[in-house]
Amino acid sequence: MGETKKLNRVLLVGGTHGNEFIGIFLIKKFQQFPHLIARSSFETQTLLGNPKAFKANMRYIDKDLNRCFAQHFSEEEDLIAYEDIRAREIHQQFGSSGETPADVVVDLHSSTANMGLTLIIDRDDAFTLQLAAYLSSVNPSIKIYHSGDSGRSEDSFRSLGKLGVAVEVGPISQGVLKAELFLKTEALIHEILNFLEKFNQGEVLFFNQELTVYRYVKTIDYPRNKSGEIQAMIHPHLQFRDYHPLHPDDPMFLSFDGTVISYEDASTTHPIFINEAAYYEKGIAMSLTKKQQLPIHVEDDHQINVGNFL
Ligand SMILES: [Zn+2]
Image (cartoon, rainbow, N blue to C red):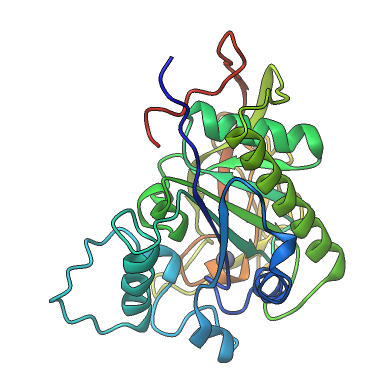
């Protein structure tokens, strides 16, 4: 067995989207009371992702910051968009060759869809799955969404860290706080930090044999006319039914003239981000996922092997 690798720095981010208030005000709280997120075996840093967008109470100023991190960020390049400039600053600070590289990035988001308390993961490595299994065991209501090949593993803020996860909570309007979701998110952050602390201290971690994961399949756009205008709404039977099974022939959209448009694929899916306000401009009415049971493999000594990527 090789030397045990440790996590040295964790970055908590809120306000990657400037109108998602739960993450923003949690970060402000943690900045005021840093002892809440302090752990003995690593440093925890906090960051307001897009302060200019927060000031304007907008998701972003020029473009979505959570799609800006797939770049190489050359120093010479003249960046125009505020979010590209911001992403470069963040990369220079917290990227792998930055001043204070982040081993783990936890990015806090909220959604107008009924996402409940969701942990978003991008990878299938043992460490990420163990973290997800641990959180599920502490709070069985947590949903695990795997972004699969949606592209988020390359361009999202969390992709900056050696390990990255996002927290997505909802339903909540943009630019609004909700105490219940604030407290649930805060509790989840504490459990993430507790897991990382236990990992660093080499403790045997609680684990499930199996983990339920909702894996990204594809996105579905609203029905549109030739000029791109939306022709139908989410069907009332589907609204707020995130993570519930949607079977072939189940109603999906309701057009303005009353026509029901059904789900037509051959297999049952579990849609999420249903009617997310921020996704109208992206041409996304919902994301379809496949519900999977993943076996959790643990080494004989119950240690997680993270040596390959730390
Ligand atoms: Zn967001």
